[in-house]
Image (tube, rainbow, N blue to C red; front, side):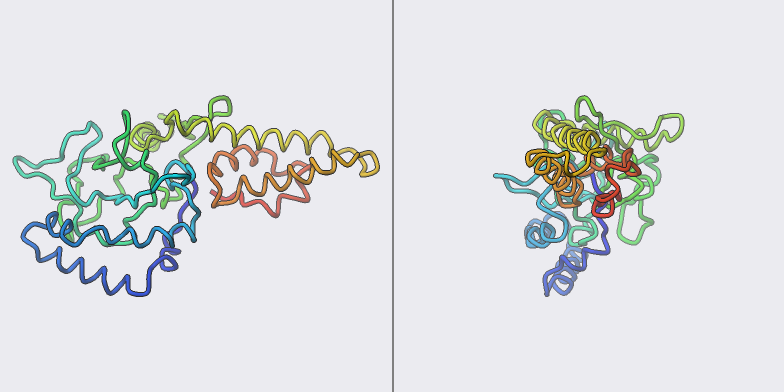
Length: 287
């Protein structure tokens, strides 16, 4: 998961987005049944898919899986319909069911470009209607009420603090927490829940993340082993290999590349190594 800067969402809007999204939001606001009105208006947010890809790359913001041979979703981080807690129970107050965060249905800041495995119900995971928070008494129930984002328990790629919570295992390619429970219990719980709710370690995903880690390690190893050699000591095969290794590292840590967060994590311990000195300035190693 790489950080998605919401200030760049302005680059993703169509020319008429602000005007039309306000019109749609106003319709929903005065509707007797907001959910029904959202369904009547339709899936307008799909018009942003192309511009999201152009700005941030053709990959899921949650899992970093590439978009190959399948459509992707625009996930509403705050669910626009019903809402479930961490246990999958529909959120209620007495007999009243939470109406969903309908006022955020056409708010571009609520959108996350997502693969099907992260957004839809797949196997034991999928975000779907989940929006667990730390303290249910802080749940936002209506427009104008204080936002409950500070209490969210699903990792958000638009939060740099959330992105920093995620780590990647070198042997398996699976996700893990970068913090301990004792040091940061809420952060630890975010990772634990998100591994399931976002399908971060789905069997179709982890082998490809692991391959990115392996590609980083093999490229770094080649540069390390050849760093002490003079150019005259290298044959053409080695020269090509060094050039390819450097280009591979540039691509692997590019923000738009699939599984680049895992790649960056395994480059960072070597950032001050002499064998990366002439390359480090060309690598994006930010979260």
